[in-house]
Image (cartoon, rainbow, N blue to C red; front, side, top):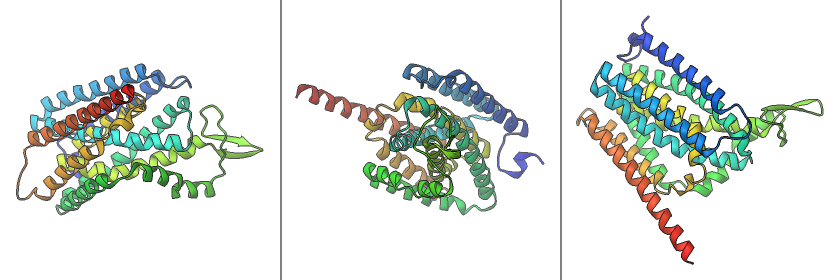
Length: 321
């Protein structure tokens, strides 16, 4: 059976297959070019890779919009921007995980690669399931909208110190250590080593599990968010996947100053609150796609410039004193 007959999408089966194979090929190229050594990834190399990923996404967006229509092209771009902004917030949590488990910089890229690979598989399953639910049960829109509004409120209340403490007392870590023998020893970038004849998981593997579980939690926010922008399963899938593909490189670009993005969470709260409200009133008021794109873009620019300005002002004051 054709895939676009089982889920709501304009994309034919060949496009799903071609896109998936293309993503897999890009991941292999990415790992071979940017992950060959264990010396970590320099910021310059990470910046080049980030630009390449964004360029690939925008080129595909232009092609898709020209092939399947301007409206779907706008939906794709809006979904991409929403997921990209949520990914930046995810980077902060990943940074906390690496600090909590004291993962050396030179080993972080391997965890991020497999973390992204796992995220792609999870998102694909969640998006196809979400599309099927929306196709058969319209009221799911209201559930998704309520989830986003609740998440927006939670974002405003989140405390960074509390997040760090939660990681240290993570139940997944406690459960994993009970299930699998673990060690605090590193041996290159291996996930498992033999210690006194016993096969044990290194901190790299434990950190990878926590990263995957964290992405599972983030998917609860991002999947409803993308379905508030589009109800086309392929648009939701492709925009989501292309946004997280560059997450590994983006981490090494932003790792040193992600903490300075002080207005990111309030900005995300505004975006999620807006698209959650859009979902809740969809049967009464239809907000055009260009308006959604304008709101998302404007909030992101305002939050970024505001964070940069305040950080620069504080840095100048410190230098004076």
